[in-house]
Amino acid sequence: MTEEKTFDLPVDRVGTRLDKFVAQACPDISRTRIQKLIESGHITVNGETVKSGFKVEKGQKIKVVIPASAPTAMLAEDIPLNIVYEDNDLLVVDKPAGMTVHPGAGNHDHTLANAVLAHVPEMDTEDPERPGIVHRLDKNTSGLIIVAKNPIAHMKLSDQFTNRQVIKVYITLVKGYLTPDSGSIDADIGRDPHHRQRMAVVSNGRPSMTAYKVIEYLGDFTLLEIRPKTGRTHQIRVHLAAIGFPIVGDAVYGGQSELLSHQFLHAAELEFNLPSSGERRHFVSPLPEDLTRVLEKLKR
Figure 1 (cartoon, rainbow, N blue to C red):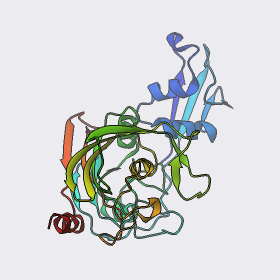
Figure 2: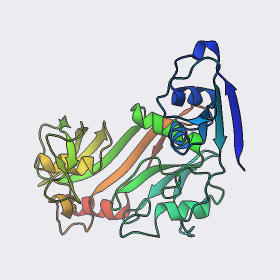
Figure 3: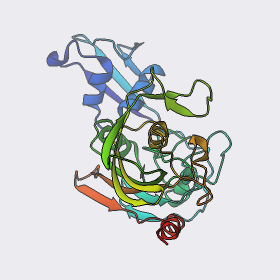
């Protein structure tokens, strides 16, 4: 159902950007959706369409028309999910390696997003192509991922990621004997200029930082705890490969191995604030059996 809201501009809000005014006047609408509503002409000032940065003035009327959420064209698929936690706002799912998070080039179905739509048929989403997806895990990375059930939860969770309030801990096995036994990798990441499907450490990339700590040395391999401080595409894989310690099984970044057919990278811990209550929660996922078998083999 389409909803309309009209606001008379308070004196103390004169000179405020339109998008900021609407965000404060309508806290139930995410900032991403506000931008889209302004661009599509659903938010007007005195009946005129303006840009997000327009400064509102005394005596103006701001009208916000909120169209009904567009139904997603994505197919809901009854795929089993390992749900670690669920409430009215979100799911925490333990994703297996091999499952793509959302449809894209070469992966049109059988994704986490398809499975979530079947589990939450009433999903309220602003992005029908990526319903509820707040952050990503690579297809062949296993572990914990958050899925939002509604736009407000999505906005609050996204803000936590932006403000680095979400703690993410990964477990990975790399080739080589990594020393020192703790440290950080601070190197900008961008699209690989020679292989457009890959990322790389490049001078004109985005600032990226990855902290690591050695858990155990296993012969010619090192088991690591990883805490990424930023969230770039393939960040952990690229950073470790760049310092000469590629992840075991990661053929894209030089870690080919007979031990494993996909990268040994597991999102083991997540800590964040629940959108509704603000309660701080911590979730843990044990290593999957295939990764555990690799470690057992190396220890023997």
